[in-house]
Length: 413
Image 1 (cartoon, rainbow, N blue to C red):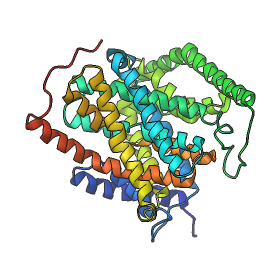
Image 2 (cartoon, rainbow, N blue to C red):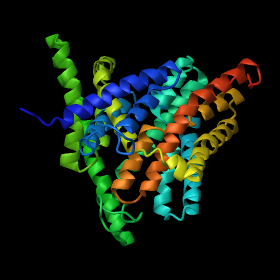
Image 3 (cartoon, rainbow, N blue to C red):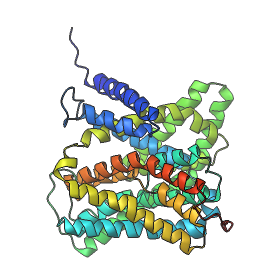
Image 4 (cartoon, one colour):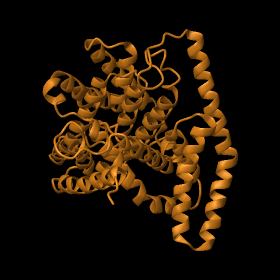
């Protein structure tokens, strides 16, 4: 008997191709993420041959988002942020503002509305956690002064994007969008928008209170009891159930996003003494669904945008590679840090990734961001991630020649 297997074929096709192309990318000293995105392009509707199920891919991507955000929350460290708070907090905020302003300026040249430009600029302002941490780890810079600043900077960017994902649906009407595909652009009053924002913040506050009062006690207690059973399988399942259950509960009971729920689940679990084990046990499944997330993002990318809209792609890439980098370098130097530190952070931030994809997809879903904007963001992400190792190689050579400023950095406050 013939059975339709769209779910199996989508998962198998995506993972097998991601493995092959990821291995090829790794062979050429490129982030495997490039291979995963290319796998999505191959199985997407814009290239010939096999096409994965277009309805299932977004749902698999949603699972990937949940587990990605759970991982972000699990590695979130107030201690790391506070160690470099004097530069990381103002620096990241100013850099996000500059990159967003540049994006809005380019969007104005595209004849887009200010709301479209805002989402487009925000998507270009935040670096990929995966790419940045891998680049620092390869150079043993995580514990260096510039590494600690870069990680703290990244934490602030992640928090800013989490807040953006929470508020964007509430502000969709004001920004020229609406609920879901096909919704007509609304022109709500300022009071309507304010009420919607306050309502959203109230729901988020209620969810946060529940997580801090109940979640931070119950989740560690539950995992401790599971550890006592000695079953590694149950512990792994408990971590997964926590991530998915809290994310779904946040959406169903409080009306907040899956992403925010998963992020807080990770944050609460990070305070547990079993946080390192939880991260280790959940890593394989997180990686697998993260791969499917990047594959689904690649499926949205039409390679023809590189030919049909070269000036748009170039403008997007210049904001990511030049605008963000120059802003970061200037900010770090203004705070009295060395040229070496400034250049390392500037190169680290010269790319975009997972949060940009999530924000672009949400912007299109809410009818705020045009599909051209999403295509340009995807093109900018692919090219910037591809070029980031090259920039680091040039930086390494520059520093090896002794051209970099070798003076010490001030100690973090």
